[in-house]
Amino acid sequence: MNGEAVELSCSELFAVNLMGRKGVVSMTELANECARTLSGMTVAVRRLEAKGYVKRARGEGDRRKVYVGLDKNGRRIYQHLLNGEMEVIITMMDSVEPAQQQSFLRALGKAVGSLENKFLARYFDIIRLTPQQQELVADLAGSIYRPCCNNPTSFPDCNHGIALLGLIELMAANGYSREEILTASLQFNAFWFPQHYLKTALVFHLRGNDWNKVDPKEVLGFRYSSASGWREQVDAKLQKEGYLLPGQKGSPSC
Image (cartoon, rainbow, N blue to C red; front, side):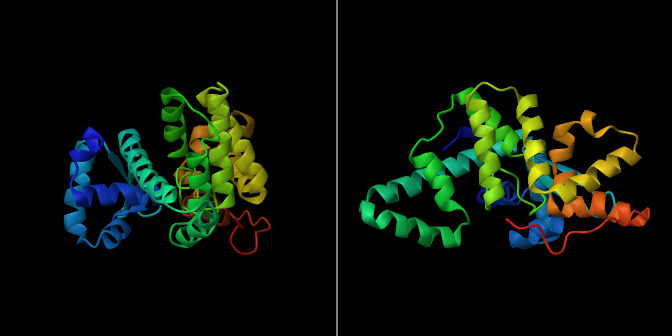
């Protein structure tokens, strides 16, 4: 196991794994998912924060709420945990007859969304990355969100997630820069979710920012591109200001 991961307790690793899958979460949600009291979870998060694995922030709408998510070092630990899980699955697959592998994958996929896609990308080595490119992909995928859910691209549990992860990996493998990958990712997200990003562009316009000059990293983060972040930072603010644009019926489809 990675040396950094060995330093963490089982409960800390569980919390890192949860934040890796869900992205930024409230302290209350994290405590509930980890079956800990809020005070006990706060102590654990402070330890993780002191080690440089997570970062905390107060909610803008309600300053009493505290949110926590993985920092760059924490995302590296999460990627290592994912790699370990994939190694276990690959070992299991090697013991299954080829004719049974597809059924085996689908059965597992019901328990862990999009497992088949993640496995195929890893098992068949579709896109080969250098260690530096893999680090870039892990860092970007852990910080880019999509409006259909609260999960970062590092947890591609839907069609949009796996497509965006593939885009990031393809661009990294072909030598594109971090800035170029972020710009392309925002363009793809805006294509998939036009109503969401039209409203997001209006919020930036009202702040005096030209949409063509916005920082893609800021827009693609949890605040503006996750489902809950977008509702709070974009949709709710536009409604409050009286900008009643045509809304999308229901949640965006994956």
